[in-house]
Image 1 (cartoon, one colour):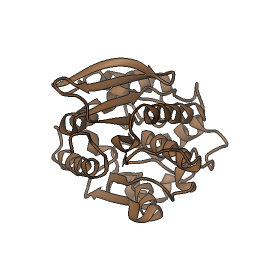
Image 2 (cartoon, rainbow, N blue to C red):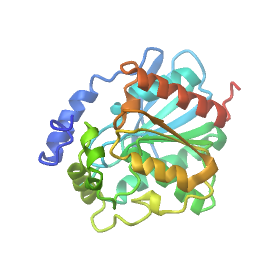
Image 3 (cartoon, helix red, strand yellow):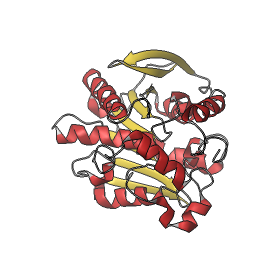
Length: 283
């Protein structure tokens, strides 16, 4: 993946085409219905349990460095959560850079979260994201806190990319251990997304205000090139944060549910967090 997709020497079009071929094989688990819709003008995929009324709503933002990826990347992970907890899942297909630079993706994320929180009881809503999607998830919730608006009952961030100003080449050992992402690709994606604006807290949420957030569950691995962001966020938030780090695991390993034992264990931790923090109608 690092050579064939997340390669700064390839055009964004080539990276998207190759990643979409991989994602095309990601089907929702049996027991879920997949449909498409639009929320606040943003195209979304929606996963709904086939045989039960949803007990809560999860909004999940896919990763891909703000430049590649689609909702299909998260289907397996969110699908497992949907089945376990009886959730309806909304997967926004937010605008990608460089065609749509900041604040396009941020605005899409905020608008979707705002719309969902007006239609459902906030305590029954969770917002999640992986990698760059975790950035958008946290940024949208931070914006609502800053504006004094309602917030979701829970936030889940998987391998979050939260400070785009950091030169990831500094920790050479970590760079060697992560088989998925390279510092060069991250730097290229950051400039494509927000040229000249990397210090804006809406681009780098770690530089923003971390007080007043709902319970935040942060998941990553010791071999994740972005592991320092997860640790910094947990420290910055304090008691409202839970940090779960898997030994020897790489960036976004958690999404490999059903294929990797460590990912299955990581999923159980997320299930426990959401069950404890969301006000689900079945509780």
